[in-house]
Image (tube, rainbow, N blue to C red; front, side, top):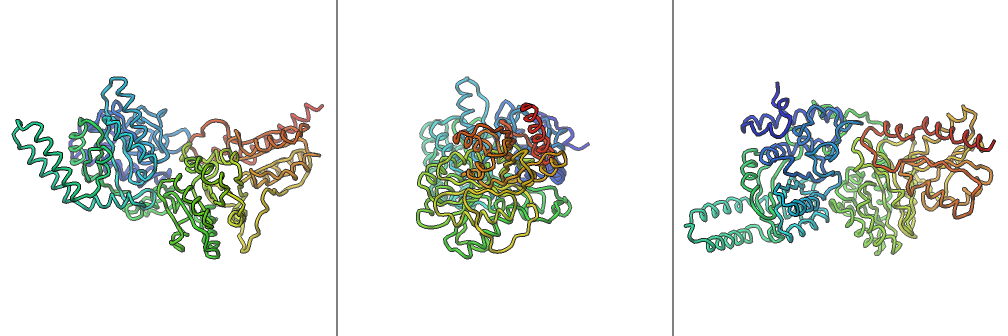
Length: 632
């Protein structure tokens, strides 16, 4: 029996010696690689924190003591040793374990995470609530150097330092976010980690002061503080964390279990805010992940022996089509600049970074800054393209309104992962963008039906100078439509009739739901129901002239969208009919329900929520037949 098979809770760790803990760390890595190679998931982040995870649960009394994992994609080792080992093979499958911490899943998961930089604020809230209740449990926030670039992290640091609550922040420094870290903070952390003389000198001074006679009392403590501050100011200029009110410790080797356990034992009962800086290797223990941590940050199923993906290469993804096409347009127009928030590979902007590095900007995990930065560029005649996942652009909602749309600036928003993304679950589904963007004045909102139309929409967006414009596209491969050079622009607010078979129903579809709607129309024709199918293209503005024309004779309207129904494309259509006083129609809206969608394969989720061709056809058939019965 392996050691891992004997670990059912963190209490079981406490009977192990250092050698056994080290052996357990290797077994955990083997289990993570085994499962992720089959299921996909966040491999490199979780491999990098195995020793830290064991040390935390060994030293602290969890779940009474609270550990908050920032982002949460590094929580696989945590899940394995917190009563979920037997379920770990179900990771990221429908009905199985989530790939992120979930409070509903376990008492050891203190805070649901999935977006970066939230741990510090959450940890402070938990610590203050603890103090109000007169309790004394420990609160530990684990945050990476990439997540530390987010603005909310600095807000949290500032507030924690001000309140002086007992709280431990562990800065996991692996020199990576999803890709290589960027910005001044990264340079500052490098300065700290390349000044080992400070660490050794500080330790020697503390040992010397420990030998001073105890009757020196306050004088010794004052001397200790002054000497220590002097060392830091001399050897590591501008100790930002100390200035913010933290007791700084480190850097410490994050893969040395003995060192981690010793320092955590020493720190756990100290008062006030403490920041422990540890150094780790992202992808530790798996040579392919260590060599290319960006590639193995989040992976699809792969061969663990070779590191090669099991996914067949074939039709290019929407992400790839977007990234390569933007490079072509930027080579022709020197005003085009590309902006991403720590995700050049994820958004396809790695191609831009390689070909036109001087006009590529990775701002770190800082979506709010990315949007306002783009607004500044636009005021000076540049053409900024902000490429961010749909779910992450939610974080910059105010900046889109206040800094872009209010001034009607021509900023282009490319929203990758629009709609359901699958196994990453509710924190990553792009289920809300049509709703949260459609309500903003001056903003045009589009969604392509396939990769060819994505190219056309990108060109349209770059040529549009009247204000901001956004388009969203799904995760994964395109339809397989050949892309020819010199594609035409799409006229703003104009849809297209794709299938004009009859007047039994008018199917208005947008984005990734257009092709399933066309397939549904063919199924309906076999059932003697003849629909007309429209590719709306735009959630805002709608093609009002086309809607008026068609609804003069077609009275059963069905809208199809891969977005929440609340405030989405279907709502826009209903609002139009209400505004125009068109009341002699019946409407069925098909889309995502008003609750957060769990994790599972994209195909399974589309089936569950009625967005496959067969399910769409069923809904339309029932709607048409019920309408006919009502008329009779």
